[in-house]
Length: 125
Image 1 (cartoon, rainbow, N blue to C red):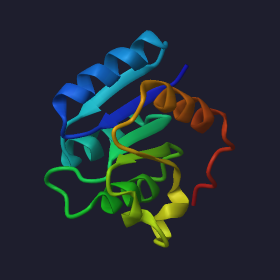
Image 2: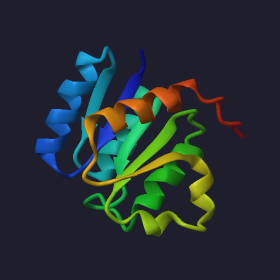
Image 3: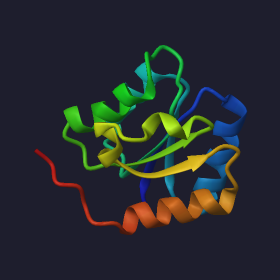
């Protein structure tokens, strides 16, 4: 399967998603805030970043999305948010392969991850 990084401030949902994704065969790391997510991005170089758009200790989720580009990572990005309109018409949107509105159904998350992993690699600078 693949290496995933889940970044969300909802600790309960992180735990549930981690169990679900590990049961599906994925290797899963979790981060509860943006600095931890950025550190894990750099250390683990995951295949997929599944992130809440609004994370603690971060001006906005777009800066974490930009981190993937700045670190020259090939990670695909899936955004989970109740505020999906924040991504519309922004340059960072091209870095995101899927946006899923909260609350998210488990099967939709699994489908999004499968599609992200199957998608062509991003062109890195």
